[in-house]
Length: 100
Image (cartoon, rainbow, N blue to C red; front, top):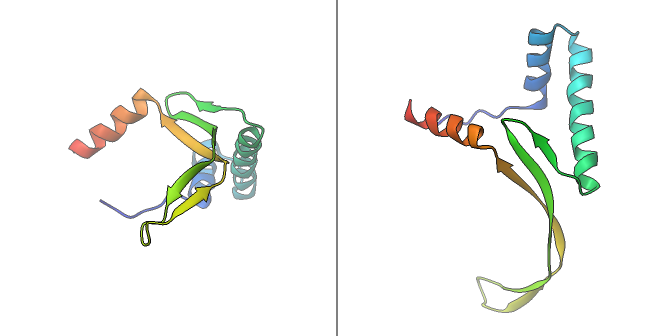
C-alpha cells in the first residue's frame, strides 16, 4: 500500500485544475473551507459531508487508566475528542479499492 498523503496543497491544486480558479484563490478556498469546518467542530456541531462521512466531537469523562510499564493507576482527565464516522458509500469505495 502506498504511503502517499493528501495535503492542503494537493486539494488546492485539484480545485485549481477542476474549477479553474487561480492557484491563490484555490488555496484560499480550501483554507476557508477547513477553517469553517474546524470552527463548527469547536462549537460542538457535527460536520456531515454527504457520501463521505460525519465528523463530530465527543466528550469523554474522567477515568482511571493504567501505566502499561509499571501497572500504576493514573487518573485520566475529562476531554473532548474528534471522531469520524465514514458513510456507507465511503466504506464501500474503500473496500472496493482493496479488491483491485
